[in-house]
Image (cartoon, rainbow, N blue to C red; front, side, top):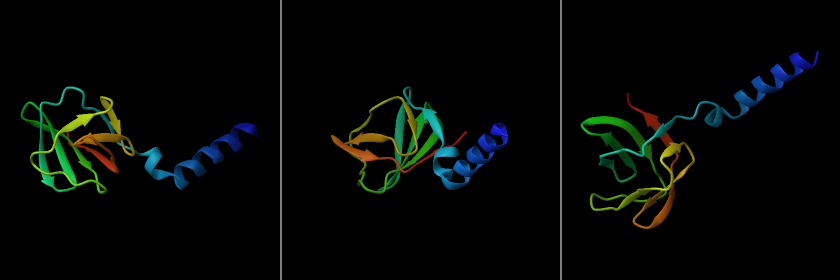
Length: 96
C-alpha cells in the first residue's frame, strides 16, 4: 500500500512541476565561444559545434557582453553572469 501511495505522489509531483522534472542540464565548463541569437538568447559552442541555447529573458545581452558561468553544470532556473550582473536562465535547450 505504501509503495502505491509513493508512486502516486511521485507522478503527481511530475505532473504539477514539469519544469523541474524535465529540465535540460548541460556541462558548459569547456565552451569555446558563444553567439547571440537575439538580445535574450545565447547559443554556446564547443569548438564549431553548437551545444546549448540559453534563454535569459530578464537581462539584455549584446555582442560585446562579458559572459561568465557561475558553475559549469547549468540547468533551467540557474544563474549566469552577464556584464557583472547575475541573470536567471529560464530555459537550457541541449542542441546535440
